[in-house]
Length: 336
Image (tube, rainbow, N blue to C red):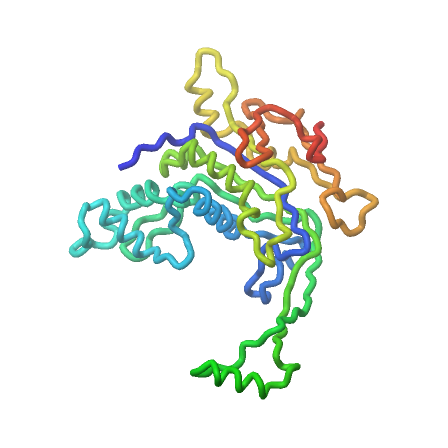
């Protein structure tokens, strides 16, 4: 069994994401149009979509890290494999479903980065239990209603016909009307949307899954990079436009009582919603339809950071977190 050194501090994090002439997160129930809250028109990027981009980056950047929720994977097979590791046999004959659920959950956490981070429902198949992950990400919501545009696109080739020989393909092509040698399709996008992504990392749950400081560093890097390595025709306009803002709970200094400070650092010294409110984003009065980040007034209220919490900023994926610094002006963020 692997030995991990789980994180000792609770964290909250947030960052601004801009979507320009792209589809931030298509809704399959709405013909893959950008997700919106119908009543108010605000754009939405689901937590599942964000986790998918993080997983994809981890697979690309850290090939030594296994990912359970990967494309085409059989979850039941991976649960069975983890259970075989636990009983040290290559067959589960005679082993009842759920018989080694606790040990199997532990093995899944040891083996897969995304299980250590996000947890998962592993109660299918041979039943590996349910794992609550320390990293939880909220649905990202845009600051203003987004417009959704639908356009027709043309592909200057066609896909009709299926023949046994290339000559038959050529003969059919020669008989086809030139105007039919193209196909039409639709594409949905939003001209612009500014979203806030945010989440929390629990030290208490990290103890159970083994989520370590090294895992945490990979998480920060993957958030900053997740849109750089998931580029496609629908996602090319996605980008983080602010540093990753990280709140670390360190506890209030306790004279002759280090255990109490450690307890506060682990459980947190302020509720997450108060920390998220320290970032203020408002559309400028002169702007009716925002089309860029500069159309917003953005400020960070550093004077209201609660006792026992320190703030850090990660600007570039391979740089260290800058703790306690307020070099935000270069990113267009005013510090109060």
